[in-house]
Length: 235
Image 1 (tube, rainbow, N blue to C red):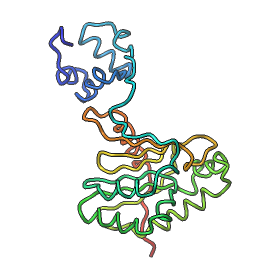
Image 2: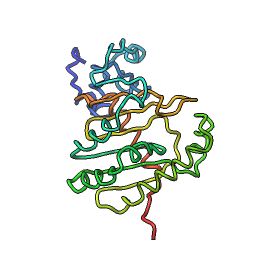
Image 3: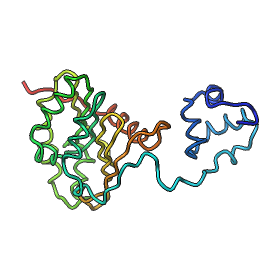
Image 4: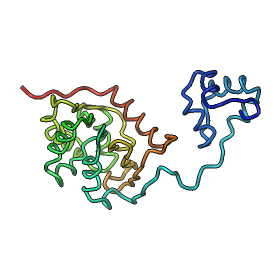
């Protein structure tokens, strides 16, 4: 790029992608998709295989604030304090996560307060009738407990449906990670086959100026949200 006088913006325009994607190739060692790599290689006059060689990963991501061995190591205040600080958006992607309401009964009030202050709040919980939710119980050796917890989560969150700035949906996707986002910070609870979520790791991410892992999870939320079904107030 330097030899040819290319900038992030000019190369991005040539291959019809966002300049941030080119920046991530250069600074984070991201590997472009094959079709994009072919276009970039043609523009640069370089071998596509050379362009697709990954750089060694950084030892520690600049986005990683903290890593916890299991969710149970975090107090519930770690989640609620994160939400209380949000000014623009709160995104929650879970199957149930009823531990939040159980340990912090005024969670709905907190979310309503944030929405009143201008936050966009999106909550996606598990669709109890979906195959993926029903499979999760046996996978985590939890029996049918996850289904009852999804119903309980719906009871907790349904009163928020119709509140200005807040939307609640149910989803039937495979939940690879539970996500709790507040503006540019995010708690990611990984899911491990055969392990309940409270015993699985959590990483705290803060969005870096070049994006990266944070944006990967944020994009994942958006993809699930697009498939989810809105929840309406009863009656």
